[in-house]
Length: 444
Image (cartoon, rainbow, N blue to C red; front, side, top):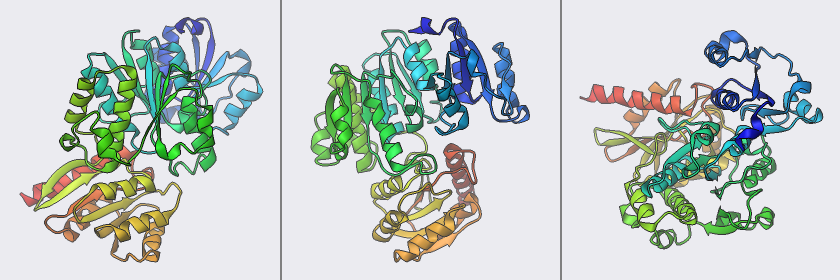
């Protein structure tokens, strides 16, 4: 309820996108906001100026938090759970919330939420199109970053009217600090190793399952069939709808004409099925589900076609940041592939990647980034030797062009995080697309 924030003193950690959105919304709701950021002012001058425009003097450069004055603290997903600033708040008896918890308390519109290791953005964007096709004013928000879609959940919650709908992508970090967060329909798409630098596998899985924690019998939980053996299922009070890759065409035909889908790959068919099940549970008419699914072309940086040059197709899959996403990338491509991969490997079993490359129709692999030697060693240990190294993404793209033959696909499928060479995965994908465009100009 929005009025619960009036006259409260709330600390917000981080002057990035979600933190600034929290500051703006909570100030509008009558709260006194204390903004903190560990970075010095010179590094975040734009955000500092934006805070001051709200009438807030930010406390930057590692300023100490005064817990005694706080009613609650809202943390950024970029702050580790074991960070002293959060653990000190817990010891001081100050409630710690993520932005999504605050957003849920602000929201008047019903919410549908999607989490999982892979497929979140595609499923979220498609579900948003399904609700729009049903004539509902839809806010697609949360952890999603796809082209122009970059709306913090708390802003969507503040702006959406009771008759609207909010469709949210939710990360494991956002789920670490919830209390009442309760989507009417929630989905857990899959769980595979990820974020090993921040969470143990058990912590990561436990955070994902929390999306169902506060649901009741009137709510719906859409869950990958592969996860139904997890003991945590016994704590899910919502009605469970299961989906899987088994008989995927048959299941999908209940909603859409499978041959008419524009998305490629079995994993994307799973995403479509999950979105359709969520939409149906929310009451979206079958014709709206079918129309949206048939028209949906995917989102940027997810198996995104870039160009065809001299008979070779170039595909940007920069959002492929872990081993499971890499395997699914190769499964979705039916032609021989030259793969550009590398960056910072986030943990997991590199032999999974090696098997996928060895057993797939992969002509060559061009490696970039910090983990290139580690990946190269794993590929060779797995019996694959057609590897190459490049110092930049531009050079890797040029090498891939030289290695590819007409009829092949060159795909950027990093299987790694991007922060060693790029601002984020979007920057990496954009740079790949620009590198391809340079090749295209040369070829003309």
